[in-house]
Length: 395
Image (cartoon, rainbow, N blue to C red; front, side):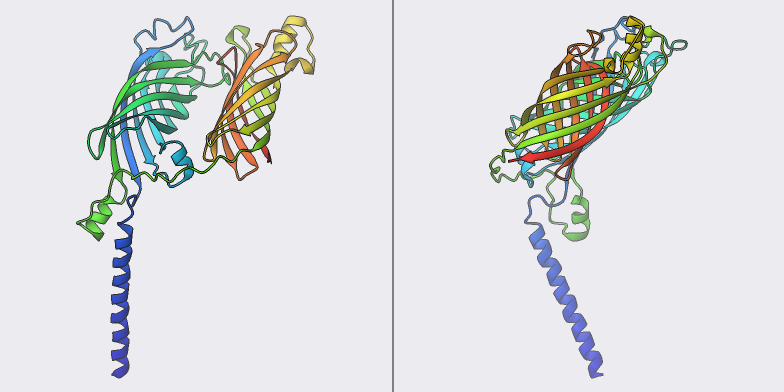
């Protein structure tokens, strides 16, 4: 009987201590101004005009476009230094669907993508955001010489989706924001299929953003009905540390696939390759600048030179050049822009000027993978680069 009493006593003491620990943990947790996870849902409507440089679709694209986007975003608090550097950005996933013109010719595209928004000129009731979205669009109706000969803008069912936006964000309440602004949307396959003029759409947008906290209902219903979890973050304002300047050498290799213009009447796919050596200097928390040298191989030049000169050598398909470089660092990601020239080439079949726009993801400290678009004559797609490389740091 005595043993049973002691066991019961120990159980009651343990239960009381556990309840006390739980209470203490909750008292400590609710002092955290960023308790939970701050997210938002966003609905945005677009309209605008086509920036089309061809001839076949001129009348078809006269009526412009309309589109709808649904996004889910994560708000940053500044807990990590890169978030404070970018003024507490938001990022997430989105879905796109649109009416871009005659559906019989162009299709009714939808798309999925990731996005990254950087706030600027932040004020208590209003601020602005520069946004970049990158993903894949589908349900396009591609060019076909028999069934869809007018579509010289799109030649594949799947295309790259790219959106650049400048938006105002007006706070309406604790949970709601009004969105307004302008944006540019681009569809392209990077010459993996031809023809490929691509579609460029520009115009205004308007939308609504709803903020919420993922644990708000749980706290209200199961923990403390008197406590209201904030749906917006409280920004951490710890000063950003000094810049760690560094010198970096990158070796990058990539492959791609291209087709010739439909005027050549050749149904073939050719291989491309890029080999790049870059030097970068870390200029600030966000930016590196540099220079680099390029070696290119374009298999499609073999057909063009054989047709033009009657003979072709392996070196005729190669080009060499150099470029300036800029890298924007976003945690493990980086955006790369490299305008350059190709002085070493057989003739003017390829433009002297080229550029590379790429998205890089750093793997550990010394490696990276990268997808990029190589262009000619400014921003005319030449091919998509799929590759990766290594990094060497020099203090």
